[in-house]
Image (tube, rainbow, N blue to C red; front, side, top):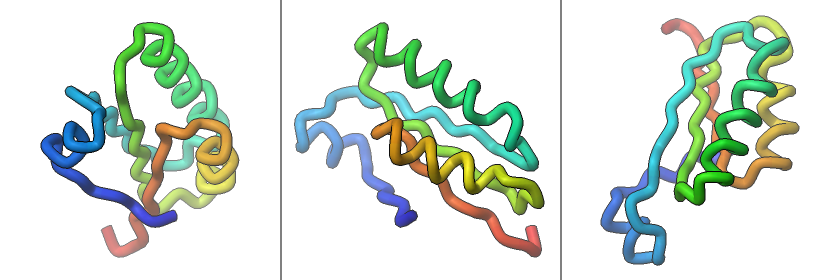
Length: 87
């Protein structure tokens, strides 16, 4: 999935003011990452806080990427990147 890196000024020019970026490092989090991301997204949406959630999948050997791929289709504010070895 391509990562879009933009400055706050660029987000604000598109009408999204004061966006919060949440960064989550993940390594072999297949069993927990879904609940974590959903909980954060739900809380921020409920509070009306413009946000993005970025998960850095740090060379996981389990199904973390599969879970993230599924979540990204469900949660619009989620992006993830894979940090491949060596790291």
